[in-house]
Image 1: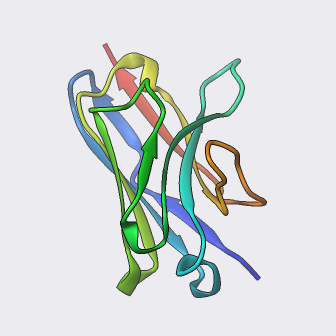
Image 2 (image 1 turned 90 degrees about the vertical axis):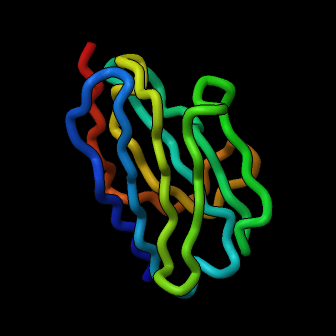
Amino acid sequence: QVHLVESGGGLVQAGGSLRLSCEASGRIFSSYVMGWFRQAPGKEREFVANIRPGGWGRSYDDSVKGRFIISRDSANNTVYLHMYSLKPEDTAVYYCNAPVVGNKAGDYWGQGTQVTVSS
């Protein structure tokens, strides 16, 4: 069975930074494109970033490009989302997902982690 477990959310002031982690079961991690999505209150879930196996290719939504960095650690089956220069509009529940195709989510979701950015 596939498991994705996120951690690292919290409350931060605008301009601050956070790092989200997603630990994945080993069967999927090495071969799947991993990604992050987010859902703000009253809005649909949206693509944030993805990273290909081996970490050699990454894609970002324009809203986070230049501020967020996605990375993966194969030794620990973990994908990270490093978030910098956070804005109040980044406030959302962030979800880990696999297998991502472009900006489309796959079947497997984590439980989500709340990120709140205060102004």
